[in-house]
Image (cartoon, rainbow, N blue to C red):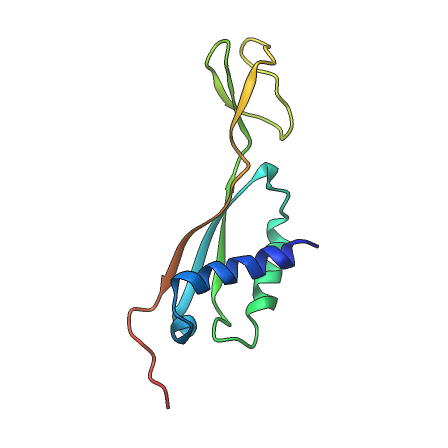
Length: 120
């Protein structure tokens, strides 16, 4: 279950951009996960909730955008979405293809509340 370490990595990335004293204002973290990233989205969401539980980021949501595996044929220039791992161009049948999408595992945006919470 490497999703736990990925979830911790996401929290570490948030920490680089949001000061620790503002972690409680983090409401949403949007990430992109490609078909070839080797990540189970539901497990990652569960691990993110577990990693942030009991921290100032508890309650922050993780929104996962799925990125389909996409190849481009170098012979006919066709770009197509296909099953992960297939490298056959559906238009011309060539195997001269390159992966153009589907390997992503990126933090895209971090949403925080505009107002600084009051500390008592």
